[in-house]
Structure formats: structure tokens, C-alpha cells
Image 1 (cartoon, rainbow, N blue to C red):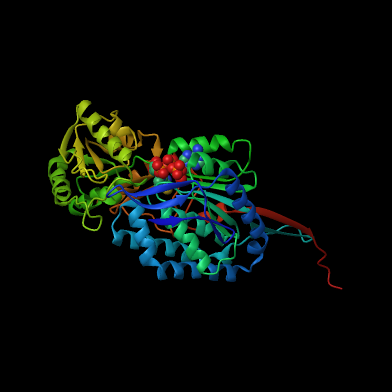
Image 2: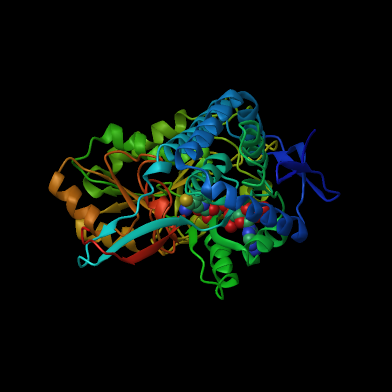
Length: 475
Ligand code: TAP
């Protein structure tokens, strides 16, 4: 069993209170993790505050070098970090290696932007000079989910650091190891003490202590809508920037003129990470005239997927916990109870681990729980549609608005649909995954704030205007 400690001010701290982390593919324990108390979180915030002045005043190019060094260290330590990521998430080693690579890419991307955090000059009268600066906020708090911990943690930690902020991060109790490894890798890369602190612990103790600490000047939370709204309540008496990256119930719309092979490949991307992805295309809308033919393509792809106990051999990885597995099973049962049918899948394949078969349900109404709630499992629901107008209304008939897919070879139609879909991202003929250089905004209950791309630089800085009286007369 590995033992993980908190990382505060460059020191690792063991704690009497610990929690066991289980491998989702076997439910066997793999590590014990120190649990941060409220006072540990306060100490971490103090350390981050103390480090802020030095970090914010380092010249931006040097700050970029630090971030590049973290990326290099992540790559050097890829084998061990990926191993821990696999043990905590149940994902395959190759998938985890890709997560380490993506994490490194976030640090590299923002390393290249540290000297591009520009203000502007504002033309005023001849007697005045006006310019703006983008200044770091101070200590930023990052609350990270379990579903893709390393990537989702890196995507907010990297821009926060690039802008000159310091960080206290709380990973999810179910999957904290890769974020603690990131903290260690950053220390190994020479990041000054206190700039990045990791307080593993429970949401109700360490998470709330971070959210309610008055010296935290910004909060980024990625997780469920319920907890996100609760966090917004907790900070309602403080005017701090908030990034809430919440759930999704994304439509994926296939028109009759689409390249069906490509669209079917796009449809089954849902099963990556066993459907535990906020932007997964869980509602598959298929034009009536191609419905049966297209469903056959989807079913044949799903039936080719093998669920195996070995996380490196299975095509669909285990769900994060036994309770997540039962929740997915009850969603599928409820789909059948409400008149739906299971076309393929719909079973827990074996007792060991938290696996669930990749599942397609049909004939469910738009009001069924399976159509409205985020399942966060390998369950795809398919629906027929007749017209653009109808499908846009049904696609938008959800409280969420994170992502959407449209498949058509008609450019005008693609433009019409993208304009009317209420989602932060609409992909056309390619259900592509988020990448650092494109923004990842959210509509409706999927979140507020903006991660990724240069939008994150605005979020992690505040604007200052400087207005100066000047004498321009030559003497
Ligand atoms: P949550 O249960 O909401 O947990 C997310 C994080 O919040 C965990 O670290 C959790 O800690 C912590 N937390 C729980 N209660 C808290 C509280 N009262 N105060 C402060 N922190 C608290 O979500 P999850 O189950 O880990 O992740 C799945 C959800 O995340 C899905 O809804 C998914 O759509 C969403 N998600 C969204 C995105 C984007 S980008 N929109 C990306 C990935 C995931 P512990 O669990 O350790 O106690």
C-alpha cells in the first residue's frame, strides 16, 4: 500500500486521519491518503499567501520556464504517475499515459502565454496617459473531481500559476493520487515552496474549509451541479471570481446526409472512460429516415466492445465506485420501467470491480430520468427526429448546456443548428475532446466562468486601470 501525505509549503505532512483509496477495477485498496483538517487547509492557504509576493513578481518569462519544467517533470515521471492514475480511476495504463501527456500540454500551453498577459493603452486627451494591467488575484482554490483528476486539475492549476497566482488544490477523495503526484513533480521541477499546495481530504471538511477561507481570492470547482450550487451559496457574501464547471446532458444529432460511419464512431465515444465525462454525448438524436440503419452501425460498434476485468484489456473501464455502478444500473432499470427498451448491454458483467456493460436504450421519452439526468456511466439513449426545428427544441430541452455534436454534410444546416443549440461548444462532424487552446464555456446549469485557452487568463487576473496626468510639452 502506498501512503500519501499532504503537500503544504513544499513539505509533505502525514496525518493521523487517513482514507483508503480503492482500485475501481477490483475494489482492492491501493493507497492510504492523509486527510486534511480545517486547520491544515488554513495552513496551506497561509503558505500560498506567503509565497504570492515572490511568485507574482518573478518576471513572466521565468515563470513560463517553471511551468515548462513542470511539464518536463510530468513526462519524466510519466510511468509512475500514469500507474497511480490507473489505480485510482480504473482507466487503462495507455489512457492514463495520455492523461499525463495532456496535463504536460496544459503547463506548456500556459508557459507560452506568461508574457502575453497584456494590458492595453487607451487614447485620451494630450494631457493624459491611460493604460490597463492584468494583475494576479492571490491565492486561488481548486476543487477537483475524480473522473479525470490529473487533466482537470492541470487545466486550472496551469493558467492560475501562469498568471502569477498561488494555488491550494483539493483533489477528490476517490482519486487523489495523481494530483498529489503532480504536486510532487512540481516540487521536483523546482517550483518555489508554497506556490502549489495540495490538501487531500473530504469535500465536507477540506473542501468547505477552502471555499470559506476568506484569504482565498478565487475558486475553481469542477464537479456536480448540486455541490457547485452549494459552493456558490457558501461564497455568496464574498465577491470573488468563481469558475463552476458542472454537469452535462449533451445532444449528439445525426442528420440523414451525414457520413454515417464517422457519426457512428462519434456516437460511441461516449463509452470512453465508461461514460464518466461531463461533455459525453449521452442523447443520440437520429433522423427518422436513417434511424434503423444508423442504429445497426452503433449497435455493431458497441457489441464489438469487450468488458474485461483487466483495466488494460477492457474496452470499457470500471465505474469509480460500487455506488456509481448501482446508480447506473438503476437508471437503466428506470428506463425500462418507463417504457424504454435495452437494445444491447444493460448488465453488470461480473462481481469483481465496478464494471457495467456498454448500453444502448431506445424508445425512452424525452421526460424519462435517463433522458434528463446526468447518468455518468456507459449508457447511450437514442431518439428519432423529423425536422431541424424539432430536434433543436428537444436538444435544448435540458437544464444543461455544455457540449453538442452535429453531423451533416450541409454547411448551411450546420450553421443554422450551431446557432440555435444552447451549448458552450458545438462540434460539427467530429465529437472532439476539449484541448487547451480552445475555450470550454458553458450554458445554463453547466457552469459559469471559463476554462481553457486565453479566456482562462482573464479569469485568473483582475483588471486595473491606470490614468495619469502627463506633461508632453518639449522643454
Ligand atoms: P462532486 O461530488 O461534486 O465532487 C467534486 C469535488 O467537490 C470533489 O473533490 C469533492 O470532494 C468536492 N466536494 C464535495 N462536497 C463539497 C463541499 N461541500 N464543499 C467543497 N467541496 C466539496 O463531483 P464528482 O462526483 O467528483 O464528479 C462528477 C461530476 O463532475 C459530474 O456531474 C460531472 O459532469 C462533473 N464534471 C464536470 C466537468 C466540467 S468541465 N464541466 C468536468 C468533469 C466532471 P470529495 O468527493 O472528495 O468529498
